[in-house]
Amino acid sequence: MSQATDNGFKFDEQGLLPAVIQDWLDGTVLMLGYMNQEAIGKTLATKSVHFWSRSRKKLWEKGETSGHKLQVKELFIDCDHDTILVKAQPAGPTCHTGERACFFSTLDEAGRIGQEKTQDSFGGILEGVLRTIRDRRANPQPGSYTTKLFEGGHDKILKKVAEEAGEVLLASKGGKKEEIVYEVADLFFHTLIVLGYHDVALQEIYQELGKRFGKSGLRPEK
Image (cartoon, rainbow, N blue to C red; front, side, top):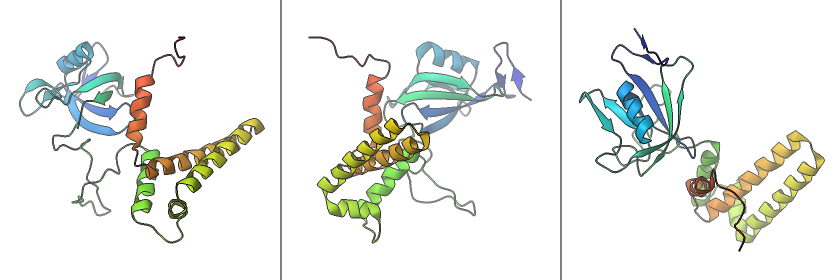
């Protein structure tokens, strides 16, 4: 039976709420832990994620020994008030195995756990497309458009980016939403080709955007 509190939280019979930790930059689900009222209070007060250890029966700060802490950016509660979502900035790998996140094993259709580690759960659709692009570069496939671009070389890739940027301009001038969406998707794809060519991870782009987030875009006058 859940326990309702004055602030609206619905803790379980052990006085705990599951807390999902998400990378604030790309949405990767990093881990799941449990918080009681004290852990929530410490998390809010310190802006560093704290959990209640169900095995050790004690409060603990994520990264207190490894240094891989989780800096809180935003906190949310779900519609039933019984699960917390924490958007955080990780200082290093979150998983105790040394992996960036804890969800690196797949389940097949029969429910069996995969033996090989994967990053397929990390990030969103852009990361998934970039992984495919990198695979096409490492393992060329006949008839693949991406493979043909890489075979055409750097200049051909850049020419396509310039062409797609021009298409975005024309679509925007035309004012039709569906054309803008289509052309921007093309531009995103070909920009990802550039990242794949130079072996740049989207996480590096997100980190740069994170540095700029909340800051004025105006350059100071000299």
